[in-house]
Length: 143
Image 1 (cartoon, rainbow, N blue to C red):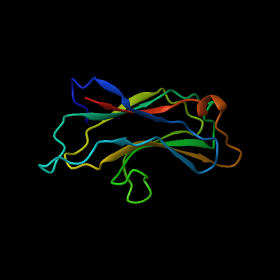
Image 2 (image 1 turned 45 degrees about the horizontal axis):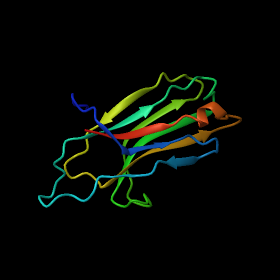
Image 3 (image 1 turned 30 degrees about the vertical axis):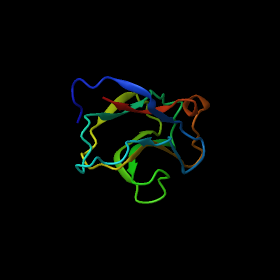
């Protein structure tokens, strides 16, 4: 759920991930490090995370080519285990996507590391166009 008034971004806290053209490949952005929980045991600074997803045409993601875009968190920066999906959106498979943004408010005790992840799934002769592979899904820390 988005709050009104969060519109300031720090360039150091903006990361992105681009789709791959390879079957069953997940590409994760660099993580945003929220830092350790404060002495009171919570994150007290008000902020949101924003996923900005560009538009994709039906030609860029034709039948049998799908992207699953996720907002993920983890206690470890490497995202090697215990990864939590907070948002998951599947697009493509011959249907155009007009683009948009999704805001997410991290809980007071949320994980330290957050990233955008894009999984490419191809079936039969499906292929992701080069123009789609050049587009970036962007995750921003907004306060």
